[in-house]
Length: 146
Image 1 (cartoon, rainbow, N blue to C red):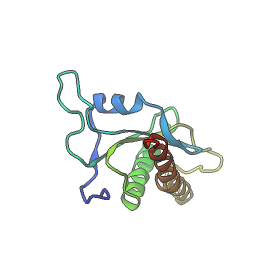
Image 2: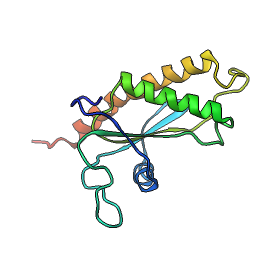
Image 3: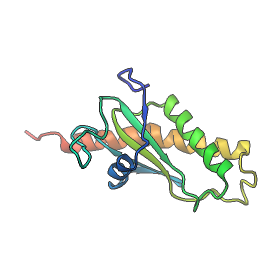
């Protein structure tokens, strides 16, 4: 749930992913990057809004390049969704992207508890304090000066 109480919707269409991933990452960690855009005014080629409503939208991109096994990709996607439930995102469109592989020497099993813990810890930092600090800095920088 978002802070306003609206459920987080899932990004599913290619145009939605392209609209969000076309922007620089808002925050990054060792393995993940979080891209985000405000949903107001973002429209498709036909002028229809890509992200209707005022809720948060979440997409997850886990490339095969960084997680070769499907079981690992699915486990990481589940960790992203679970972390977002713990730390709801503010309204807007957000995409969490895996940008680097977890070392196979450290996590030999595709679904090890250690991998899940490491991913969840990193995602909590990404969606929690780092994002809040970055958004506060952006709000402060865009505030009118008197």
